[in-house]
Length: 559
Image: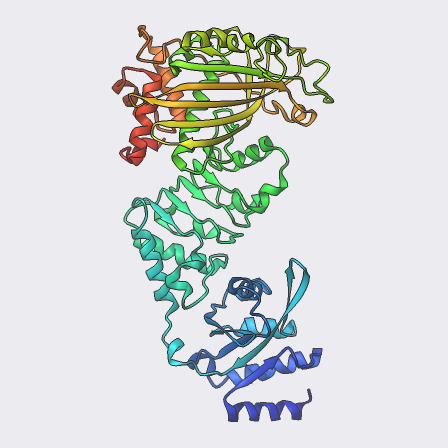
């Protein structure tokens, strides 16, 4: 484009009060510079201040979603796109259209890319082609859109609708109906996140303890360290479904987090070892007690992994039950589990050898095969009746007869099949070894528990245990983190059994045990235990009941 052509275009644009750039035009280095010069001269009359002066037309793009199109444009040139706020997105024929203002740098960046944006589809790479009309006067429908006021109202509503004054939910903020109907305001933009957090800080009733920023495609969180008094003492942060890296998390390491969710971020895919993942996150947040919904022990490993517990309360219940059950099962006081079983409880064990594994040759499963009630292999059907242990005494006799065990909590998976007031069904799998039989291979187990509520206390009604040698792959991953067995509690765990006097040391250990399971501080754990005369199981039931009724104050969880 020569100087005369440039002058002609300027005069034409001034007469029409409109300037059009299109990907259909041929671009060269000189033409790009000329187009940018033309834009600067055209806007020198103040057009940008007086109009929503940019109309973006994405040609033949209606097959894409609104969010896909807008994020593709915003991410085409991230530093400049911080200034772009798309307004009133709509479709017309095969084109997608939106308006924007005060985004000169964004338009310049797109011109330098020939108004073409590379995108990745499932079928392969594709291109979004743009036409930008500059100087288009806004319609009455868009003229009075005040983005700041819209965002402020949405934030204010979320603050007021929080579960408590200390909880703030900003999940999927770009999809908020009060904002999305008028503009696209993603928190992945650092400027947008800063604005929203500042507004939330102003509307806060008191300091925030819990913040949900999930599903916002966040990459950076430095805005959390701005001068925001009500965010300084965050204890819980949900970052699921974002694009966080470990270096991004290190930036917010000054936050005193005790609970963090980062599942679904790019950093998670970099780890093949769960122990390494936990170790690195704990190095950033040393006070962390819960990671991705799993409680961490004092040694920094997950107490139990959960995969399919859909109800939050069922997750808490499973964690409490399995932690208590297996810490006692692995101790020298396995008989203390007697109080957990219903008087009519039933227990059966099946076992088989898994061939073709590195663990096959030294499986040593005789202790389990002799008690196995595998109806497909037992010829004497009368024996199957004898191997079905009935009644809490027979069940305990069978459990005590089994070898001493040490379970690997990192290997646990759990599935809540049913969670109702009167019945709970839990399926748990994992790995264990026999400390007194060091030459035997690591075992794999699957266990199904059916619990029934009796006088508002859950008791095990049915217990089915399957044991085999683990696979070669499981053997490699087993016991990657060395942990000390949980200290056994020398007391009865049910009101049906006779209580014995407790020493101060035993009471302290019980307080620590309840604190590890419930995450309450020691003072509130002591109160809880005193209310139930230091009955550990009833203390857990008491905690669950009050937690469900939301009658436990936030101060109980401050440490």
